[in-house]
Amino acid sequence: MASSSSSASPLQNPKKLGLVANALKRKDKFIQFFAMTGILLLSVRSLGQKYRMHDLLEDTSALKQEEETLTNRINNIKQALLHEASLEPTGIFASRLRLLFGED
Image 1 (tube, rainbow, N blue to C red):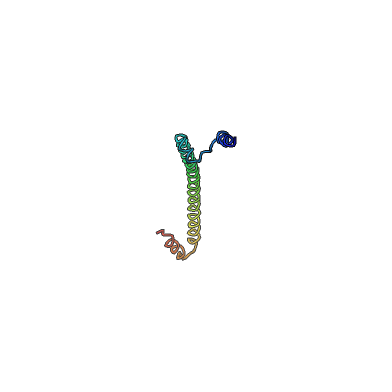
Image 2: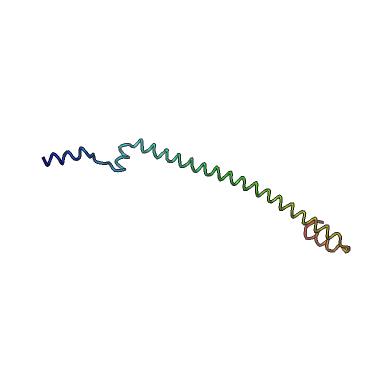
């Protein structure tokens, strides 16, 4: 009876297969699983890059607008300085500013 109980035990609890044995047994399912996982990871990466490109485009437009604002401020300051310098009777200050600004 002892031998029959020991032989009945493996029938009730079938031997669990390891990961490699399971992979070999169901090779097509594992290949499909890894392919789908790869596709999912590529999709997530692509989505991240899409949002990054969108953010970069927003940054680019903000920087262009800031550059335009700064250029306008610089030109306004130059014009104000040249106007004040032109009020001086000798004209030395105005000529020096035109030389510095590269205007002849």
